[in-house]
Length: 104
Image 1: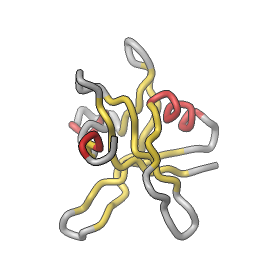
Image 2 (image 1 turned 180 degrees about the horizontal axis):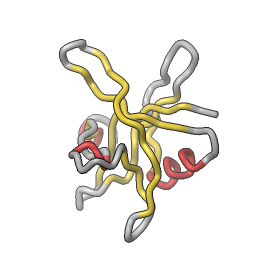
Image 3 (image 1 turned 90 degrees about the vertical axis):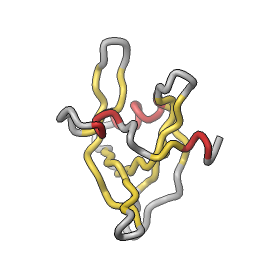
């Protein structure tokens, strides 16, 4: 059973998420980001016992805060990751940091 945090995304030229910044949660620490493909992310979260939450920068506290739970859903075209489905902008993780310009 592994817990993950997702802090950012990489998108293609059509603004579609292709990769996620995955962090592994340890007993006393959280790993550095690992660029994880959409298919790898789906596989990790479909593994029984694994779970993920968003990890969002909190400007007032100057640190990351645990956000919403993330789940795999079946879309009309394919599976994808989504946070709590309540029609907010955060639902599809597009609000996370865009790592395209930070790390290729």
